[in-house]
Length: 162
Image (tube, rainbow, N blue to C red; front, side, top):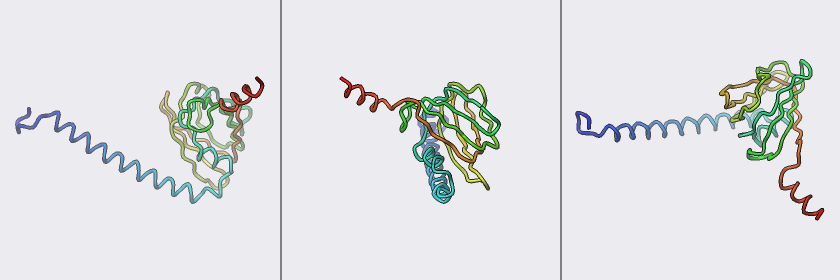
């Protein structure tokens, strides 16, 4: 008990509850503002960039990072634990004018992304975990290529062959 007769645990719990409510309200406001922003620029972005952001890569894991040339960046991702693609993917960013993606980034987990329109391209801002880092890729376009068939399609093909 503290000097006023209130249990410190109760007081701490009240502070935590207030912080959680404030945090959830603030995150919802930020999310709503970003959604409005995205909708306002969507028509000006390359269709594959829109697909990438709309489908999401949350929980995708970086398998490799390649820079075949100065204006190309290739990310290989394992999306099997994600929410949409469920297979390995190659993202090829074309017309790259800026990237701070580390060359040795294997094992990083894709958490959250936002896309912004620039004068002649787009910027993809991505928050990764392990290590916790925000990356920025400024590019003209992106290609999304599945490297394996998603599990359900593989099972369907296997079943038909039996």
